[in-house]
Image (cartoon, rainbow, N blue to C red; front, side):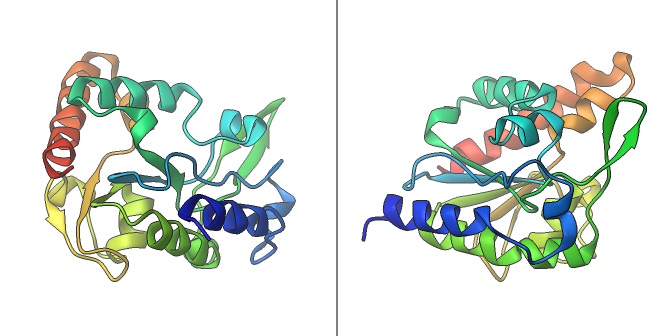
Length: 196
């Protein structure tokens, strides 16, 4: 069975996941996407509202920042595999909006087999943790992106992991600091580009 077929099989199995209660909140399971032979595998925290509705990772506002960062670093998104540590959108209502809630460790642990399967089947040269949740899932609960971003680390699921901020953090930051935050994000992505 080819890598693509195996990924499709795992993706189909994940659609019916009930390992934690987040399936009750999310519209659908948002599995990773990209080539089964991608050199870089990017891991975010969880799907956001747009991703939950569309069923694809990184398609909302943070996805646009992510795409811009990749392009500036010379990485083609079409050649990357993009996924999340948690596969369902965790949210709370606020008026008519669904507001993101950080997944807890139990929810991350419940989704870990899906992420491990994606990494094992894609076999990338480098895994990139986007944000603290993904970094702590891959590198341990004590890992701090603010102190160790843009450098290569080894984890129990891959020998080459680089952590950086989540693109949404750039959007949430003060407007006058966004250009500098974006430059730092792109600098981390250039480290990844050098590894692939």
